Length: 247
Image 1 (cartoon, rainbow, N blue to C red):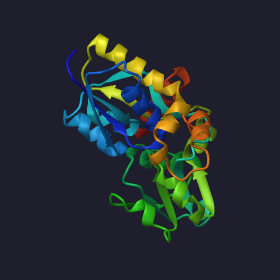
Image 2: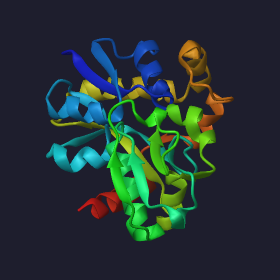
Image 3: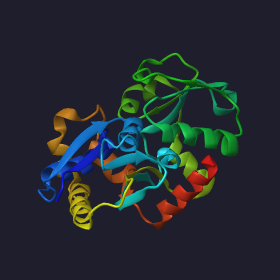
Image 4: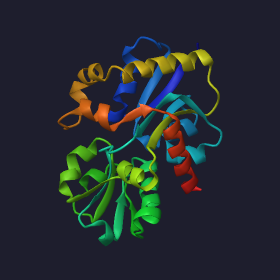
């Protein structure tokens, strides 16, 4: 089997996938790069990798693509790490700063603002690394492990997965495993078995990454209760609806 080049997200919610790839012993001939979500999509678009954990808002730009495996980064309720943080109540928000790291969260908050919250704020794009230092802004979309560190700076916290669920009654998919061409069936099978191993060994995963965990009191509970890894029919329905809004 040829070398399988993989790009994954460098956040806590992806640790089970990374753990499975590195420690299951199932998939051996692969290379792995860890990036923020927006760069995972770029890696795949540029042809630098064969398979990537792609933020779903980037899918329309990729062209022809294939879903690989029945696993994703999703939520069926509160996700905790994709937030709109605000100094004022929702109906008083006039400006929202946008985290560079994820296109999906940016598009999701715009869909919610227009179709659910019915607000029309000014959108301000942040540069890489700026989101964590924006303590004095009116409102901020922030994603990933940084949310554990900055959420207490804002009195109003809106969990975007929960807001989407209230709006649509459907779960949300933030990222899915994508290839641009159909991959070798053996490679896909081994890859799926490897990441499945990580998803079913979350406690071992937490111990493995103990030195890299964000400052959150119970990372295991976060992986078990807030992140939903199965790419099932309901999530596919939610993803289809989200992509229809992007059109």
